[in-house]
Image 1 (cartoon, rainbow, N blue to C red):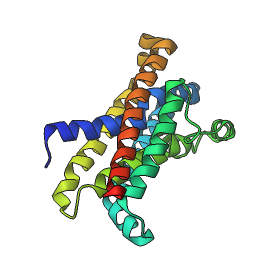
Image 2: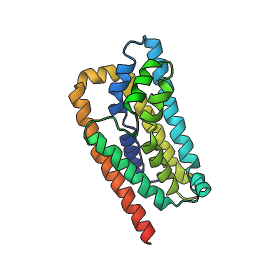
Image 3: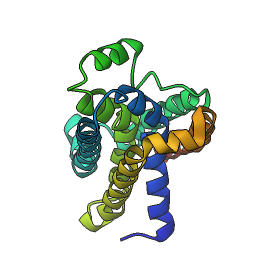
Length: 209
């Protein structure tokens, strides 16, 4: 099933790119006027979308490689660059441009019945960076389905962690404050930058070989 260290690395990488804590302020602001039942529906649907999207890409990622004719190494380089760009914005305390544009944010607030799927589920949580991450891990797992279990476990752990963060989001924000959330987002951004650089290094070394 994979070593504990590998599983921990998968969980940490997916958690860093999904960044539920960094997304939490937007979730709380967007649902501030909702009654408890409406907020629960939005939270549950967003988390389900996150889990389903990442699981699907983890399972079919290798087939996408074959269908489009590109190698894992090229995807690692592209995914690593993308992760680094996302991490750069996180280090500056911003919601990344690859996830949500100002226009998307305005439209999301105007269509509150849809925010559970867009933009909370996609692309704030299950954004291109998260999809790239699970696809790269799935691509390195080989043809043995058992090797996919650590990735699926990582997706499950992050999905549950995201639910917990959103479930107690208001309390967490009150306890941490905006400064605390920003500080933690920057720490996650630093971790994500290292993961992105490693992906690029792995891809370049693979091409050279």
